[in-house]
Image (cartoon, rainbow, N blue to C red; front, side):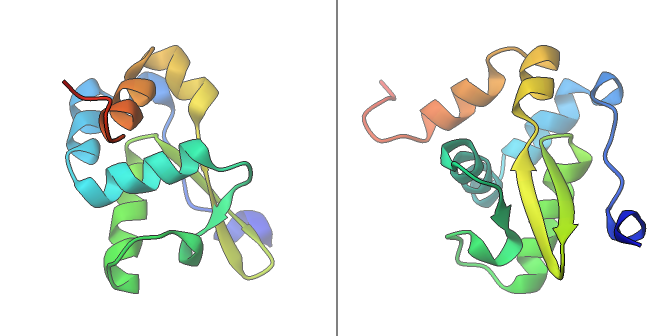
Length: 109
C-alpha cells in the first residue's frame, strides 16, 4: 500500500539541465534544496523553514521531484523528502554544491 502513495520519480538520465535550472531558479526551491543538503535526516513536508502556503509548498516539492532533485516517500502519514545527492552529483557534477554555496552569506563575490 505504501508504494501506491509514493509519487513517481524521474530517471536522471532523462532529466535535462534546462529542467533542473528552471527548478532551481525559484528562491523557495533553492531554500528547500539547501535545507535538505544541510539536514542529517530526511525532512517532512511540514518541517521546512519556508514561508509559503501548504498548497504552494506542494507545488515547489513537485517541481523539485520532477526535476530529479528530491525523492519523496511516506512513513506512516508523513511524506518525507530527501535530496537525491549521490545520483544527482553523478548526473550533474558540482551543481548542487554550486547552488547551495551561492545561497550562503559571504560565499558570493
